[in-house]
Length: 178
Image 1: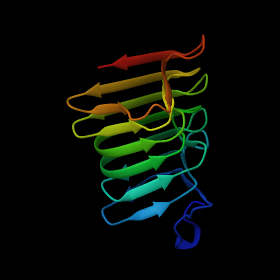
Image 2 (image 1 turned 30 degrees about the vertical axis):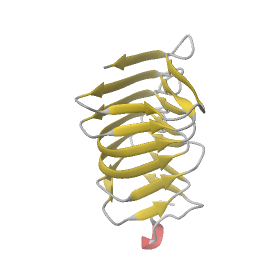
Image 3 (image 1 turned 180 degrees about the vertical axis):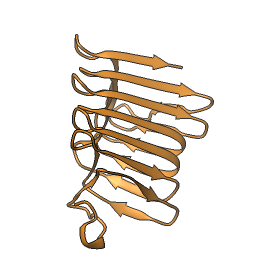
Image 4 (image 1 turned 45 degrees about the vertical axis):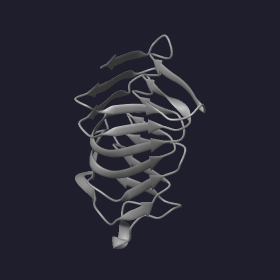
């Protein structure tokens, strides 16, 4: 679903933003969408801006920068983002800046997932990423960078968190900057 017919994607939908525009999620909004993808075609891009509200993406893999040549960004300054698995830079290029609000992840999240994927996660200011289960990868086979600075927090909130991995496979190039 790409907001066809003016309808918001719902709990069984995959929301796709490939039009180079911004999806804005603000105070008072609460929505569950199975997946959110940007950059699902080479040369296409999309942006998600979260300033408030609660967005839930329970599916197995929302992708920011889904395919090679595709790009995507998330900018979060407030609110809550609940994710199953989030891939920032899956096969393409993805970035996420978390300067306010909280991300709650309940599955593996990967910054720079596959061999051509390039991902950057910056947690700064009042931004919090809380890993509640499984783990976080700064690169699996791609290039992934996680930056935690200026008061931002990367939390591991339970004994269900298995790993924090930097450069998981031989081809993976991972960086953690504190």
